[in-house]
Image (cartoon, rainbow, N blue to C red; front, side, top):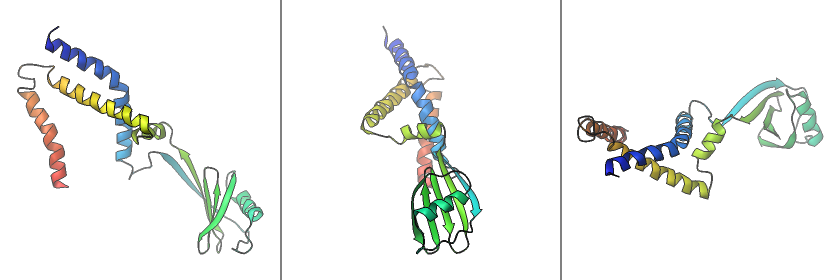
Length: 182
């Protein structure tokens, strides 16, 4: 078997092997690139409400907190309450919190849920554990191998000696230019 054929076979087989993981990393990478535009991991919903329950630091107990939760929209599984500052009361519930201004009675129910698919993909992208770290390292080595073998698949004027060299140089210069500018 000659070197060109071995190169093509290596490129093809490693490419097939890492195709799924490449797509997962690409999708989660796009989502994480835009985390200032949206939350790629969680859906956060806020609903406003008003309560007439008389709430003070002195009279608040679990029973009064449960009474407040009955007035808040939705169903809530009580966890604990506390006053983070001044007249603001926060009651933690399963999957979110209820925050109330005790002076005005105005409140907000915040519900937090995992964003389907993206949460799981991003979990992998964040490198969740020791073994996944090693798996990711192997994946990175496989990407390097696919890239290097890909450089030598085509020969002639469209190969690495001409057009391929120009495009590869552009692919190296663009990120360096970006680093230089920013």
